[in-house]
Length: 493
Length: 115
Image (cartoon, rainbow over all chains, first blue to last red; front, top):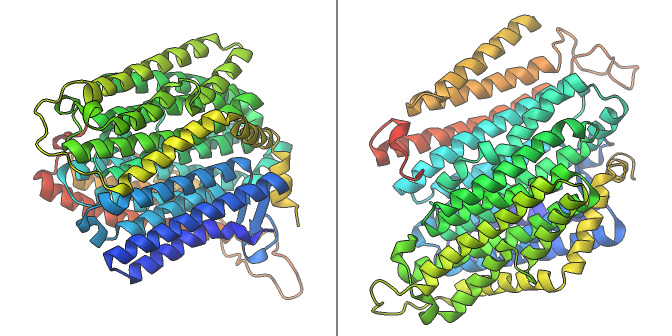
């Protein structure tokens, strides 16, 4: 039992409540910054405890398992918690100057904290129905954040985002109901334990496929991703950065969790489906990006193609591949958030996101050009940045299991990613500006800091890749041998 | 009883699906309502229907008798109802706003972000 685990939920909740009381704008920014800094530090402490002492468990109300709602943090959860804390902290800095008065008045900061509570809850919980509830907390806040401001584009995006995500939740809930009907339990470790002893294929496959579809919609995989490019470029940049960085990855995390823990006995059935999904997600995402000429829409499509690599790691299902997927998620959250933030700075300078209206930024803002290149090259997989190692591990594990077609697809998609990034580079930074700028708008200090911090993180992960690889391997080891997780949740005192 | 409920659930899912495929935003909301109700009934039915067996531990026993009704599905459904109520309330406001901003109740007129 470790009471520390309640803090990643309690801190954002408390911050949100305090923010609702103190409505003065400058005060809100300070409170939110302090709250997110605390969240980040706590998540690092949790990571440290998991590293030194193994899986941490908290049973709420000290009910005996499996009746208690259980929070369990293994290495993958701890890594996800700390990266979400890091991103939250950076977004909090970025939004100080970039968020408009109107949205602040309507409660941007409380909503942001409720969103973080939902995300952290999804990473913490070891109960299927509880996971549904955290998904809803996260979605509810994201709906409002998406629509806040009420411009036509936003509202149209929000309609699609709400409808498809609500349908995903309904499918998830149906699967949960059927699983409960079949097994009489919703605790994930208990489910894994019972199904391990007595696996009834026909009854369980229904819910396995339903969960695959539900999490697939949330993770934006191939035939289910259409809500993402229709909506992610419409809200303010700070919002789309945290959506693009964090939210789809919660879906990927849920996929990894369910298919390595609950349905691991049936992996032969789900694996071929995951292969096809992974390949098509990578290809269709990157081709979608190649056809776009809006800065943030290109980035949105690249979220989809990168999700494909993570799903590929899960589909290969070897310890190395799972480690690759975990590494990939970690690196991708930082890089993608950073790219969105850079697009926000570009928009701040030139007032547009259409590539044809932009240009000449390399000459005027060389530092910004450099800060774009670091995450862009990392996304494309150029050594020694973090993306190289992420792609390297996934592709290497595909080589080992002799999936040469997937190796080929992954490599080509990597090249096409670089093509899109060079397209942005040449249009936004290299090309001559259409009309010379009359004045050079000053970029607020608080917009620079998060971009620099995350670029440093990208370089740091690349230079000290060994540490993160080691952590990912621990995560993969725990995921591939669910007996650790089951023992910790069900029997540990 | 299970058969009747199974048919009802099937019809609700079917009708909900049909309604969300329509272009009118009001029908979209009705579709979402039907889908979420169908799911609640599905949980209710899938976890077994037990009539008139209250889940109260009798005085000289320490656990429930195995024939008692399971109270958990109802707790799940109650949670799910509250959540879907919140989301549907938000959906109504959002779609009203969409009607105001776009000036149409046709989903096909809301495609400016799709290109």
